[in-house]
Image 1 (tube, one colour):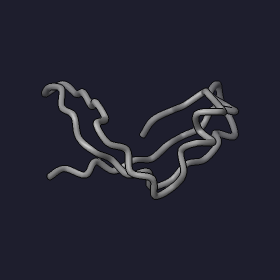
Image 2: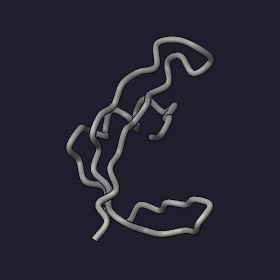
Image 3: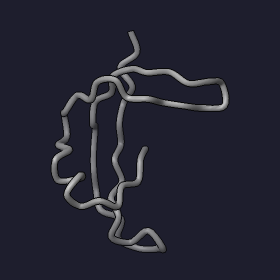
Length: 61
């Protein structure tokens, strides 16, 4: 999941859109892969209220 503050950016990211060459990192390491947007919604409460939550799925080959 990603939290995005930029409203113009989030408007261009539609559910079902495939994103190529996305850079991911974790404690294990860094890798580049494709991902698909599964869901997006605006956060309605808390300190992140007004930001957007983007749920993506990594399309590992």
